[in-house]
Image 1 (cartoon, helix red, strand yellow):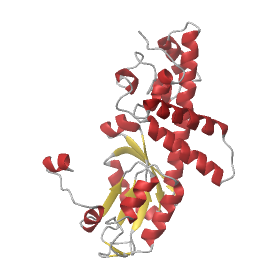
Image 2 (image 1 turned 180 degrees about the vertical axis):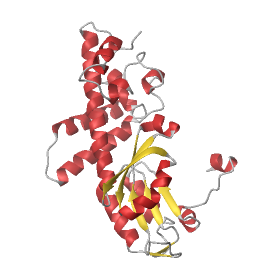
Image 3 (image 1 turned 45 degrees about the horizontal axis):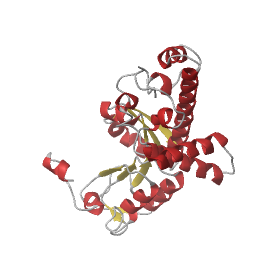
Image 4 (image 1 turned 120 degrees about the horizontal axis):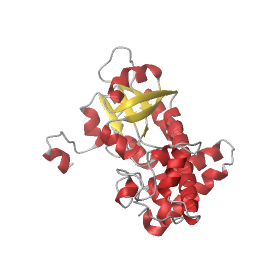
Length: 275
């Protein structure tokens, strides 16, 4: 807060004080527990009764769909201090993002949004001021569900690319050569052509700076746990999800939780830097 205040940005002492002086509120937090605390905890956004100032709450956290749906229902049961055209009660959108730190810095994030469609349409200009695209996913919780599925696919693809590159190195093929093959063949994916995990192959990615400044392995482990628990709730067994969760949890236990998740190439397989 001190850093932002020194830059001339208005700060408040509690989430409730922010809500009391806002029309639209955006939250982005690490886990479901953090979200529940900020919304429903002591001096939380919803802590002072059922009459709310903001007409729209947007949560861009990556959390379980059940928590998103519970909060959306709670907010929909409240009333508005100031009526807004088309909205008799406040609305909530779950709107996690994709693109990582690089897209956040460049303003090219993708928002995947669940909730009332009318609220999504009204909020779309706000999303596009922060990112390049928005995708409406359906009812409350569907944005959170989409993000879990996206990060599951991202984790598994990173493991596949890292495993293949590490194997190629052991078989005598340079990672840069194999990357060129991937990127002009059927193995091409985001983990090979945009976020390559091998130090020395690509500039401007976490692998080029000792895996610092990216998407932390501990957050990937958390998201894979969400995917595993969601699969259990719908009675499905997903072996790749379970194995990916074990691998990233092990990375964290080995002291690499704050490193970008692409460090799996170096610290799990292990692969070698491209010299």
